[in-house]
Length: 279
Image (tube, rainbow, N blue to C red; front, top):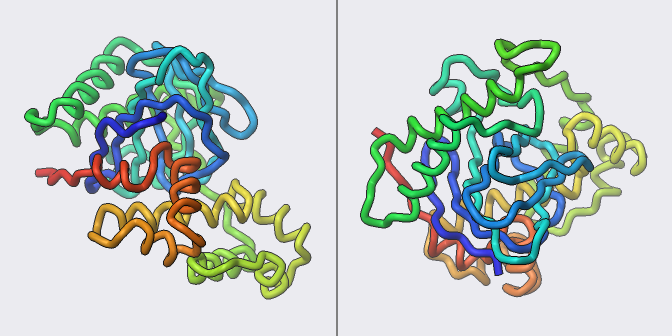
């Protein structure tokens, strides 16, 4: 069973050390997402229907709202992975170089020796509960910056390119997004949202996918995961209560959803998570 070895929250977002041995469902995040192999058998990450290796020397970079999921390649044991969820605004402030959208040039990222040293040093610091790493924020910024730069090398834009700007969204999709953000904890009827936005259901799905990058269902699940993580780590509410408030019929259905979208069960995530103060 997949497990959370350590989970740190901070101004940067989240950094997690996961032992993964099961396939996830397609999902997305509003953060920039980096996945580094630490040890164990290789795995793979499917991004926009293309498969990329997660192995020594090869990391995976997923842009905000880019659909993806992890899948094991070998069943000989769990794959230990360092997984970063980076807030674009924090990275923009920290690096002073990146695009506010934190969009990567390529999904596949070569893990050079310097980058590998940062990955393993970060993993070691997270595993040791008695070791407080005062350089953690710097390591996370360095990892993200190096992966970002690497993703734009050998592209038409070149390594100095800071990523494309997002296109302006159609006003009907903006209206649908507001409706989803305001009512995601209630049963959602996409037919109604499409109709209120002035679109047929097929046109709504097509336009939503083209402008947001994921389907309405995946977007809605991302909102639920964000709220679930906030409440699991920021309150002492019972897991079952959080699940019911988010529209799940039982703690079991909430746990299945959380595992499929976030690697581990909500109770395991809560036990592993800790906040770090960055100075």
